[in-house]
Image (cartoon, rainbow, N blue to C red; front, top):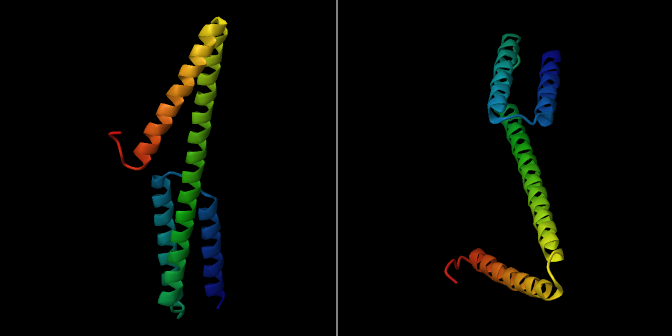
Amino acid sequence: MQRSTGFQILFFIALLIISNLQASNVEDELLKELLEEERRVEEERMKESGYQFSEEHIRQGQEEMEKEKKRQHQQASDEEERLVELQNERIREQREAEFEASVARMNEDQQKAARKQRKKDSQIVKKILQASEHGNHYS
């Protein structure tokens, strides 16, 4: 029974290691291969000692690994999305600052005309984006 407890501890440690990894797919595959090899070696040791793995234990371990991999992938995707949003916000702020600087150099009538044109342009862009979301690319 000590060997099964040892395997459970080893499996738990492997799951902890996996949960803390944020590596590339190549590193994930290498880790998966190493864990699979370790599992096979431990399985052979336990078979020699008379302990039999149940298919249920193996299936549960594989399901847990898949769930963890999906969770890590989702986290990485969320982080990437957040970084893209931050970059887009930074670009928007930079464009806004450039526009305001150019407006500041204009006289009062030109400023009104520029702001009016900008408002018109933004409405056109919003309309195009909404049409695109609905699949109407020719409006």
